[in-house]
Structures are given as C-alpha cells and as structure tokens.
Image (cartoon, one colour):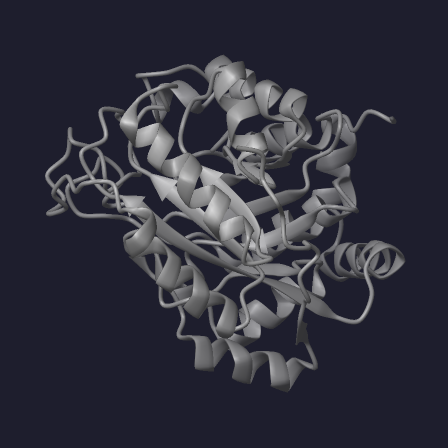
Length: 323
C-alpha cells in the first residue's frame, strides 16, 4: 500500500480547477463503470439527548435546539421504513443513534442487534452509526449482519478540540480499528464549513486515505448550521472548495464510494453535477437526514435522468446473520 502524504494532497487539491477535474474524472473512470450512484437511506433510530458536546450537532443535550430526547425505535417500527426505502431504490439502509456509544448486554444494544438482523434479511447493505465501540461490540454487530460502520473523523486532529471535547480524536481512531478487525467495512469522512482551514480538510483526508484497509466509503458533509449550537452562525462552504475536496478524495481513495452527504439542499443542480463529475458516486437518499432536510426523491431521480446517471444495484445478497 502506497502512503498518501499531505504534500501530494495539497499539490493535487491546489492545481488549476479544470486540471483537477480532468485528473479526478480519469481516476473515476479507471475504477468505476456505468455512471452508477449508490442510494443510501439514513434513519435516526434514537434522536436527541446525546451527552456529547459536538459543536455542530442538533442532538446534543448541551444545546437548546428544540430537539427533545426520544426513545430508541423498535425493530417493528423500523422494518416498514426499511422496506419502503428498498422499494424506493435505496440499496443501503443506515441507522443512527444519538448517544456516546454502545454498551454490550443492555436492552438497547440487543434491540439494535435484532433490528440489524432483520434489515439484513431484506438483502440491503446495513450500515449503523452508534458512536464509540468496544472490540466486542464490533464483533457482535458484524455477526448481526452489519456490513458497514460509519464513524466520521469530522476534521483534522489539530482542529478537532475546537469541535468536540467530550472524546478525543484517538477515541474515534480506536473505534475504526475495532470495526476493521471485526471485518466490517469502514464508512468514514468529515464535515466541512465548521471554521477549519482547507489544510485541515486535507489533513483529515490524509489520515482517511491511509487507513489499511482503505475505507469502503467517504461521506463529505457540508455543515448545516443549527440554531442553538456553537456553529449556528457559520457561513456556507464555498461550492468550489467542496468540489475540489470531492475530486481530491476521489484521487486519494480511488476505490471508495465518495458520498455527497449533508448540505445538498444548499447545492444547485449544477453544483451537484460538478460533484458527480469530480467523482462522487453515492448520496444520502430520502427526504430527511437524521434531523436535517434532504432533497426530495423525485428531484434526485430527475437530476439523475438529466445527467445520465443510474442508481447502483445492491452489492449485498440477503444475509443470514448468526444468532
């Protein structure tokens, strides 16, 4: 495995825009075919009341954002939503919880495991984002049929203390290590527009690009400022900075799905087209992302038709998870 260093990423990122676009498109075409886009649906199965202090998050109990702590959804409540997502064309079903991490043996974690078993039987890829994991919890999730675990780095290790103080950057790397050891795919990206520099974004990408094995997918989120959080007044990300980062990510991690995630409601159709040209080949699909708005399904499908893009078929066969 060839190491991707910061100097290479900086040189790549800062080259003339059209040169960067051409390079990213060439890398995309060498590794991906059929102009396919993966459709992932994301559902918050436990909303609000989180003890963490992530400065961007509407679900932290430390901020007055108007979101109250909710209970964990049951398997019976989640399965119809997963069925509908599959019928609408989503091939990956992602479930998120607003809490610090899981605790093995608790009724809540056992309920999540049962939900994962049932969703995996639908023939969908199952992704969860549950906060920090122990190695044992990671193995239990793998046995329950989870195919991918999302755990974003958010930003660079240098800027990270400005965003989160209730856990460390190393804590996040530890969870990713446990996910890899358990045999689940790693879904890991970040959030831009939190006050970090472009160099911070490239430092984050340097770490992600050097995971061994490489991440299966890299979500790129644009901050959605939420009233009541410390980042409520942040200005929108410059769209060309977003496109440059997507292109550089495609070059740095050529075989990963690069996902346009939060913030698409702020992007024009033309901006999204540039993101796809630069190498993005995955989106969060559905009208809501956890607690934030997302483009309507019909609008996404109309854009795909305009651009000649097609939804990616499932890469996952129905799973028989272990008991």
